[in-house]
Length: 122
Image 1: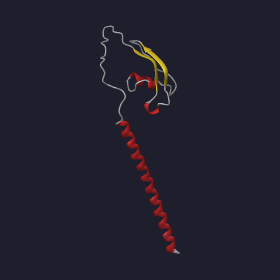
Image 2: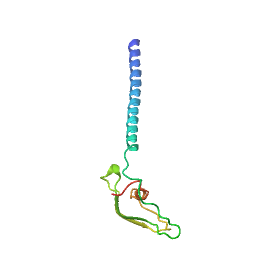
Image 3: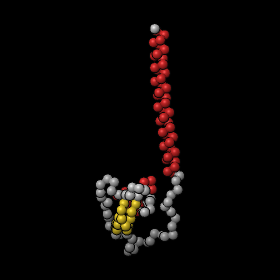
Image 4: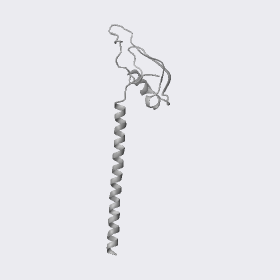
């Protein structure tokens, strides 16, 4: 009876340790998949062309510089089927301060991303 009990305790401890090892192997596989997804994002080609011919205007001395968005529509490249902005227009005159205010998810950060040219509008 003692040998059978010893064997059963041995098998229980062995299966618990194998189960713990398999959990760690599954976590390592998730980490590897995440690293591959991150690398694909980092090395993906960018649609925004940073090289252009236009130069910043010298606005010292009364030039008219303003930020203007006309009828912009936008969806993030990873979710083209979910539009974020629909025909948004915004005009910020020179030397004015503007606050973009709204509920979470209404497009405030998306508008700033478009102004900073992180993305191009549709």
